[in-house]
Length: 226
Image (cartoon, rainbow, N blue to C red; front, side):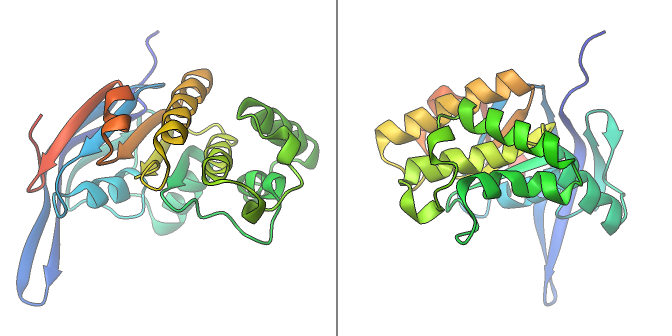
């Protein structure tokens, strides 16, 4: 049986109110993302990229339309249900890494598993395997400030993938990295996404990222243009 899409958006609309003004952020967006696929989302500031990431990551809900995560309807979940599903099935990678500075590399990667009540023995094994996969097993006891930018982004990728999510939301993950490091990070995301069946939805202006994704879509005025 074919695998269910990691993410489906159908007819998704979202507006925001600024005083008396109604601002349309997304206007009838249709999107499908397959397991293991890397999709780049690009467009000018104010085009709706952040809104789309927030809806896909269950941080916000649409005004209209359907959203599915691995075949489950998610657009009308309660706050508690959305929090639990986000914790269990969605990973996040940020431009500025968002690592906890007082935690070691291993503790940062372990934290999502701790929140999900995974057993201590399984947590240790999954963290060990994930750090091995991203080439940071020798840095497990280091704190983030002892690492380079590229290494910190590798930690962030490991943290996003360790819980084996259906979907990883990445917001400008290479913007603060030099060309060589950015290329290595993108290749690592692709390799680990394929290994774990995780789909990546990546907001980016970085041509290095666009060239390495499976496909790209361009948002303008809340609509997909290509």
